[in-house]
Image (cartoon, rainbow, N blue to C red):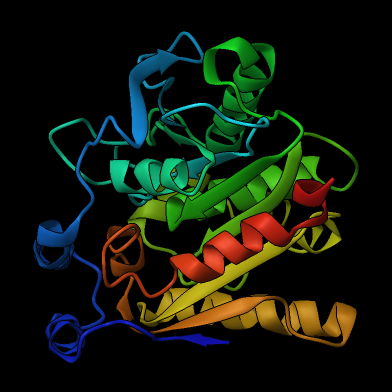
Length: 299
């Protein structure tokens, strides 16, 4: 499935000119393109609570985004896990609209938005990322009065390294029942045995090739009993393209069909997340439909 609606031609050209090589320069330039249209803080639609501690480490912090006004029923909880090559990245802060734009978008859809930090490599290596997701979910389940969401309808959403951590959690915890009702993985890495490793992967997973198979979310990810949604961008670097193909190949071999996979035309690695909530958002409609049409949401 290809998602390409709403992106202005001028923006598409500017993103294309930045190329497909993932770098700090590309990220900064992409952010600058989306900054003017990013959703700002608005207490009439979204209530924001910052830096809630879900664990003891200084990185065990999350930001909470709640719909303003009375809610007729408990809404689902959407947890976003940021990228950063396993060694960097942050949920953001009030003066920076990224990744608060994801939480604000969730709240404006009537969901509870959660944007979380997690421990970083090289000080904290595999499986720290998926452990921190588990810890954040446990905190949400144990503290319903703080967020007001439905803890039986938790949607995990990760991008890049965040998608890797989400995939790892889903592979380990979602083959049976539980609070996670669905998961979204954007430009993730799924099979370490076929991946061309960089220093970022080595910082988190190590360099022992004999461990790569057990550290890979595939094939256990394919055993998940919850709805899954994947994306890959047209201008993703080759390793992310290859990993999307590996996921498709293994899913097809197992099920005889493709998984729900969106090809994000015109986008680079980071632009799909920076666009969330913007006027020219080309993918949030699909995200909203996925979240609201899963069986757990309808229950």
